[in-house]
Image (cartoon, rainbow, N blue to C red; front, side):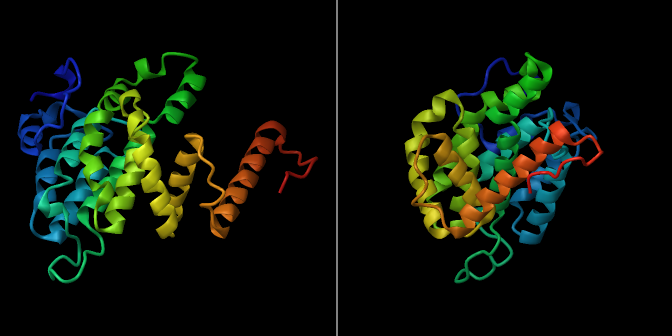
Length: 265
């Protein structure tokens, strides 16, 4: 494999992580802070036996490409590499992984899935629609790295999907939240029925506010009635979000600084 910019079309399957690591010209790829020449070493340390080393490596690698919710040139091979190592045994354990009888409290792969999820949402259909409204047309032509990432969603999804049934709830919930925006790709819509069942399971077991919001938003977007899945906290969060949206709309249209009218809250 060569540098991402030389790809003429997305790969049909997820490359081996070592192939990505060694075959990518990291020093030639742009990041928000320069080039990605330090990424190769950081990504390799994600498979270190020491969970502390892995945690530091994850921070180093993610910080290198994580800036202002933007997809950079180096983001694409980083995402592919992370997707390729999700099933590697080294990512199974976290800070309590030394005792085989104690489940990991913070599995490395859950952290990696969280980053993949955030990155996928940064390139989802809603983000593109916002860009199109701002630039009229041709938003993705102005953002070639986002376009490449979006084209690679089926390949990245193939690394996430096996973890949807993981024994660790943190991992499988993180996998679902990552899979939801990836499944916007036209070739992945057939997987939504499977994701609906996983979303229902998450809503029956999880108290994580962010995860619950993402699952509920997905089910509603896909035309499912969620009234029997919401709890009191979900309803309160939805109502608060609606009030905040009303306030933002009011300030955008009436907030002249004179405070002649009270906002709707």
